[in-house]
Image (cartoon, rainbow, N blue to C red; front, side, top):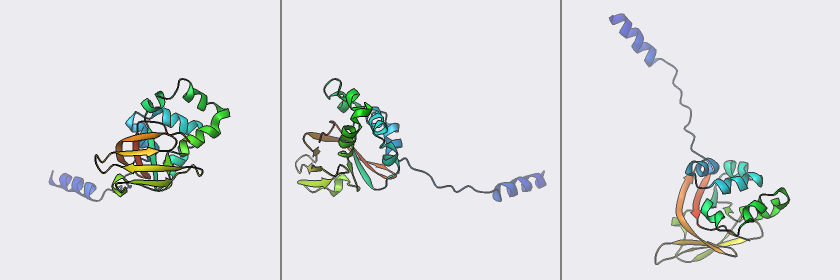
Length: 165
């Protein structure tokens, strides 16, 4: 019996140990896990941008919720998802992505202008000194309702409206 315990202990001590790195979720996986970004993910897929959101490092995504997309005029989302409107969809989606990480604690108590992946547009990002709320604006504005959701390739800030060029 003692010999059996020794053999079992030796087997445990000298068994190959798998030290595979723990993989955190990328932007797309994090959004999928949240369950409130189905429209955004469908749009990113239709625009051919989902892989880039999953694999590009050091990005910030201002992610509109399904409710934000639902607040657009009736038929807008369906129209944007049509193949012939892919360029317009890309213009809208790339307006929501910064080519760097921008956490809320990096924002001063005033408006700053940041470059987006939509090379023709900048976003005004404002952190209110009074209530610490953050808004993002293009031709319209959105409020950040949840900030600094960390993914392994960037940061997500949840917003309550779809930004339009």
